[in-house]
Image 1 (cartoon, one colour):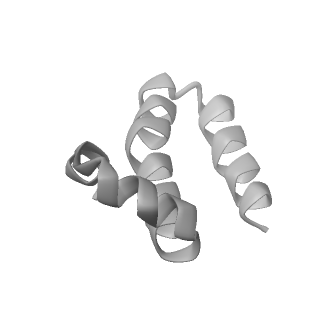
Image 2: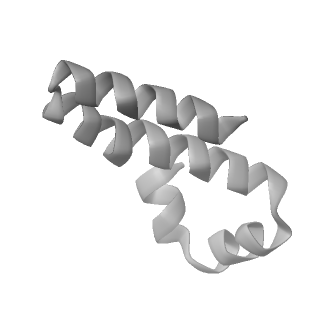
Length: 60
């Protein structure tokens, strides 16, 4: 499901020729969404974050 949404967003940016929007999406929105999902859904990621606070600083 999330992959189809990702495809739709990328396709829209590509069709509009909006490089800046696409870049911003991948650098900010996509990473933040992935980070929040991973933080709540995966024990191994929670362990990684606990031992590496820089991830929390950058994406939390």
